[in-house]
Picture 1 (cartoon, helix red, strand yellow):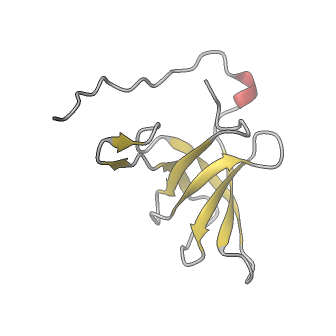
Picture 2 (cartoon, rainbow, N blue to C red):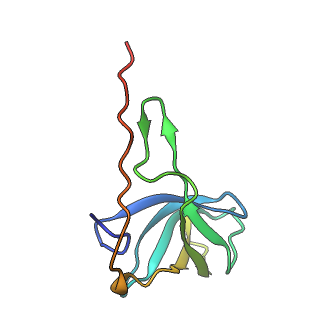
Amino acid sequence: MTLLTDESSAVSARDLRTGAVGVVEHGQTGDSLIMSRVSKEENVKVGDEIVTSGWTSGELSSLYPKNILVGRVTSVGLTQTDLYQHVQIASDVDFSSLDVVAVLVPRERTKRR
């Protein structure tokens, strides 16, 4: 099992209010999270809720289902030279105190012929 705060972990996500999409990954310190690859044109604001995007494409699908709360936006950074916004997220979860976790296991899929 890999937590979202693990440096090797990332998840596709979206802003619930605006629909802006990006990738949430480990931040630079502790349990901080960053949503990267958010278009400069999107109007992401402090306090917005970020959830998993849960995409599917043909027989492929994301590991995480749609609409699992990741956290809330704490800051949005943007410079004129950046291609994307830098969105910092605070999780509602204290990852250091987890005792029990649920493991999501996909249902068995039948192959198409």
